Image (cartoon, rainbow, N blue to C red):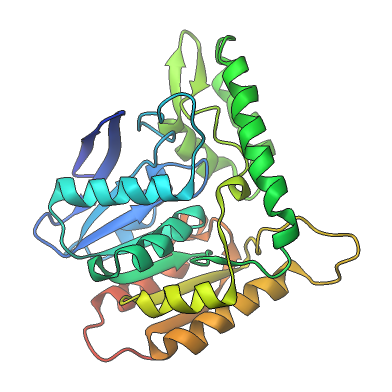
Length: 314
């Protein structure tokens, strides 16, 4: 089954664009894409999931067909949580599930502990819902400085017209900076992520969207415990064997591997949420939900349709 319709939700700075799938009368599921991606990220996965659910895949602000945020400001993670709340209000959803890939999973996690009563199930595709500060505290000011300087730089670049490239050159440039996506999935993301101009295309996304770590919040163990205790949702984490690890700036004198930090967060979630947290490891890359959606579709279907007591693992 394909997309039922396109949707636009009005917001004070413009609109939030989304794609609608499944049954309009079914239990709602909000789908959140990764950093610099868009709602097309779910085009190959959602047709494999139960069509008795109502799926809305939104473009986060500055991505896809959604409006850019007001000038003069950078993008913060909480800004996207605000967008999720606005979409839920527009759709009159009181309680729903969240399916988030990568950065979208982080947004879904943050929404789940700020508005815990609204989230039924939280599904994270190669993502973790928060970052512990562990080795990152020394990098925090660097990230904050980078974010401000990046916005100042891109505002100066706004005086120059956006680059227009032939579609094949745009795809080549896109894949150079997104090596795990793959050619076919890259084409799919660029379908929604570009606008045709003459014989070429230009990117839709806001130039102020810099490095994702510039928007991250790093939690102390005490904060993480408190936030986790607020989560009411059942959580499913699908980790790709060939996916991305914990984001960090590597200190040459630090022997800790990024994978160790990811495992630490996962262990922390399991110990805090106990039977409400399930972690499944699958073959595939960071974009396994696009490249090989069959590897995750059955796991997600079982989790969404499960109405019985929570299990420790699938």
